[in-house]
Image (cartoon, rainbow over all chains, first blue to last red):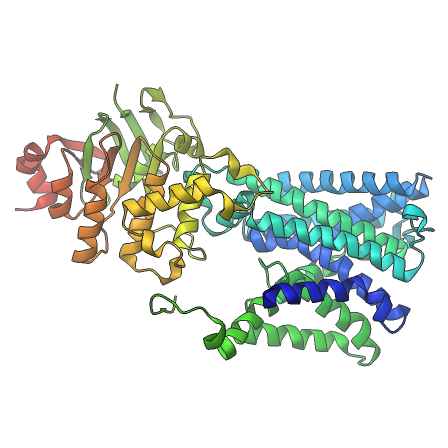
Length: 324
Length: 245
């Protein structure tokens, strides 16, 4: 077994047993939050990292899945129906989002997604008959799959963990697949990809849908976790926060968004209990990341690790390496 | 039937007529050289042929099929490939991955989100074969960022060849190369079989003349002289606008 496989196995075992070794429900809930945001960040990373399409409206899509779940439960539908329907609604909303915003790329794409996100936030505030406005929607119960009540923090964590594993596995498979490679190609050389026979717009559209699916799943988990949804969740701050998770962890990497989500959630929930000005601390951490590892925590750490121990671990190169 | 036929093609950017009533007919298997001073509209002509630009009027046909309204990406599927004057490659990936992307572009597998790209045996084999054609198979796994300019030129050619095009458009394949590199690229091009029709833009007359059978001279967007190699080289108009006295 390679060191990599051992590390992976260890990480899975540790994550799968969080409720067993974590001291107290509070920390189990923090772990659930990290995984929920990790799924969200993985979804955004499809676009922002692999596709080079930075979205500042993803909190709107996240919020749509939240509201869809809450609203359907309020109408008296069952959990299974609400979850499936919220997934469909989330992906459908992403499709509309994509049709409107994929007319542009780069700054144009950012601005259109920003505008669409703001529209959804405005609707959440003002369409009171549907969303409850400022009061939001309460979700009274959590599902009980196979008779296992997710009202228990530990059980809820396991459910979140399952979704997280499915999400990260699909992203890992996607990233090595031809379609994943094509998406990264459209990020680096869209014109060339077109000349090679690829349908750049269609590839980006599918990437949006995939991103929307993971975003919807994280939204559904989130609304069951907090059992409450209000317009706050759709704000630009939320969109920026998840984008910061992706960028600080390492855009375009598999583990980057997960590490970024852990960083932000831990500082926001745990460290904020000790330091009043936690926002200041988070800002300082981001500045440090930008200065020391502009490519993100995960690729940055790998680079520093190689710099320190590279000579021993790297295979002998056939040719002398040159700096790019 | 011509491999590539262009009739009365026009393109202008505002008041600037970059392509004026260009007619061009390239026979299957032919090696055509397009020359002309800077700003003659050579690259614009290529961009019109590949569909990167839309002509104002006129028609383009590939192997007898009118492709004037066909989107750029479809033209690749119909058998057209090009290389760029300014090298346009995937710098974060290996040489092999670059060529695999070229192959996948024409394969239905490009839509597949489930399979592992590196395990598609036939794609990887074909990519290695294309790299062997340009003499880069030994360094296939090397990241593109660690290759020389001449090697990148050859990667461009390998990507075009991997697509098994019927018509290959080469936009200044010798630009910026050292004498040794020029010889390597020249050899690659000479080894391409006759079932590929080639159209080349080039300023390096010593290598280009050896390659070309027929030459078209463009000047201010118009075809001034066209004919066999010796006809065009000896034409007084060629001397006047291009070669100099």
